[in-house]
Figure 1 (spheres, rainbow, N blue to C red):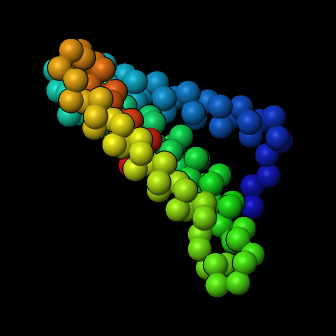
Figure 2 (figure 1 turned 60 degrees about the horizontal axis):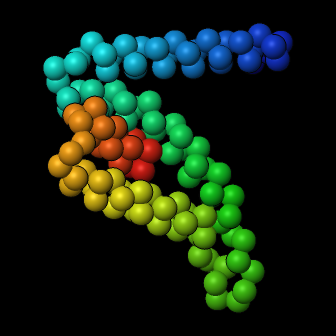
Length: 116
């Protein structure tokens, strides 16, 4: 198993994060004429935040100690309810006629990437 100095490991993760983010932002800019591909790039940027939120909320799983309710994964249920609420909010916002194409793209990306 490869063992790295903690500072070097942090710097490598930092570099990888910024390289990946830069490539995804560059891809979104490069495909200015194709909104569907832009939404995919921005969704990919937002997906890790949704993943982290779901992982954090999963810590609540098993927290109910009452008889006959210990089976309920509270964190997973809460994460799915929040994602549904965000998706519903984004769908409602998308119906407004006065948003720019960029705003609509971000609304779709939030619904697909963060809440998806």
